[in-house]
Length: 302
Ligand SMILES: [Zn+2]
Image (cartoon, rainbow, N blue to C red; front, top):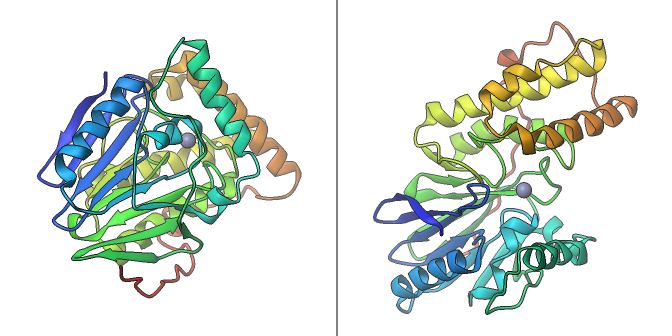
């Protein structure tokens, strides 16, 4: 069963028994926002019941940070007024594969659900950085965050100082780079700028504990960048990557070793294609906070 790992008057984080997958539910005087409802049927049902108990006649928004199947598996259980994801999420050429992964998972564990497993139909698409959405006094900003997947997206709820980051800045996972290490790095570089434009203290990752202070999420960001730089150095120089230190930091090596090796394979291909270079004198600290422009959209009032 999922448990509630964090709760304040406006924010409730449900965490699945599987992979410490987080569902964030925000409730203000204006709106209920559900982000990435997951994962097992009873867990999704608990979240659905909670939403029913607090929604009254408020609009409900359902947000997907990206299309990995563990983040969209709860979609069919919710009736939402707005369903929000990135343009790349909508354009995903592998929607059937995502649905197949959900079906495979359920059949593998003899799981039945009282709703259908489907790829989410999106009716509010985030196509660029800084798209705002306002409902009453509650204002959200969305930022494209490719790297982990091509369709990743970060959400900030202004008045609550809350950032929901999808599969970034986990304290239980090093970067899982399915799409691009260059984009991943850019997304990490963009985070302080998103912070400066929106201000948030709390950051919820897709898996693991929320970071409840700026220091905490900044430290996770540095760890993620350090992992990418160390892997690049190892690929270019041939000096073995210090895997032992990685597994001292991250506790689930039996599963995660595969993701680490997949990162090496992906980043080796990127290096061969000239997508990044390695500069031994490069100082990430000097580079921090220099991600280039983050453009803003005017408000879209609702
Ligand atoms: Zn993911």
